[in-house]
Length: 137
Image (cartoon, rainbow, N blue to C red; front, side, top):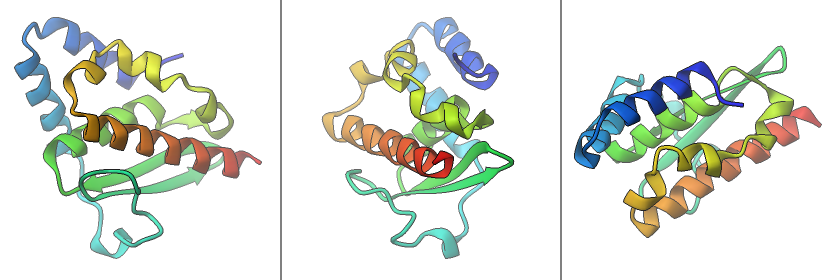
């Protein structure tokens, strides 16, 4: 139940043997994302529960889910890019059912993130699921 974009990330992770290289790859994914406009970095788009500043802006069009995001931390920007690959382009009704834990588990991210980063990642996933569920209702 994965997207092509996420599968590409998973394949790259398999190719990269060293976790340091994987970490750099995630950071590069984040650097490649366009920054979020300052006007969108408001309390309504801020994700609570993250150690760093995180903003997620949903964009639902024709029942297709997309979001843009940003963070003041490079690795978190990369995690936002990974979540974008996992969720963007899906039918909005499908988003809450995505097993993000299993999909991200394929990358081994949980084993290499601090407890605070893991909590932040869960908070981002929860925000995405809640937003999509509300839009689908």
